[in-house]
Length: 212
Image (cartoon, rainbow, N blue to C red; front, side, top):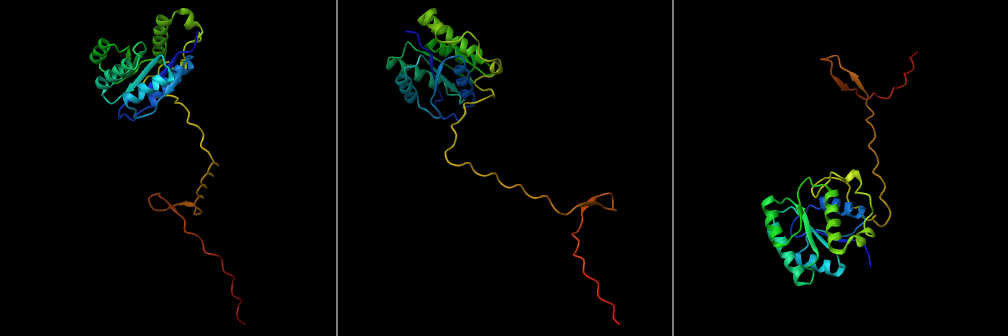
């Protein structure tokens, strides 16, 4: 029975930068996929457990900490141990080409570096799904249109729109009052053409009556 491609976007390790991961998650969602984002500081075991509970087709890791040679193999090993060896493990981050080749030799899917297009990421996932489940399954999963052009240049590290946070509960705080403008007016100074603040004038006093 055809269904949408389900993708889990994970941030393993101590990496605290997730803007790029949220951009990719939003782009894959716009491409017609169901996307689950795990949040920051997830362990490989937590990511694999979430992938198992959500029954995802793809696990995509965003790693900017330089620990990709440790985290990708560990996640892949756990996926195989939990019966998810037939799912796609992909991702991106700051990964040298030599390391990408070494991880591919272990069974990790295509990895994307800085500057990669979200269109290429979505196309790669769709192509993998087509090869795994057939063209008829893909036809009911993703729309014919590509990812919106506005997000074509964004990557795992790029700037762009992020997944909106839920609105805060309770009443909105009133805006802080604006500071009042200074009452003292500026007047030109005779010395060196500088501008100085005029001194506030004293209240005018009434004239004293003349003595008889």
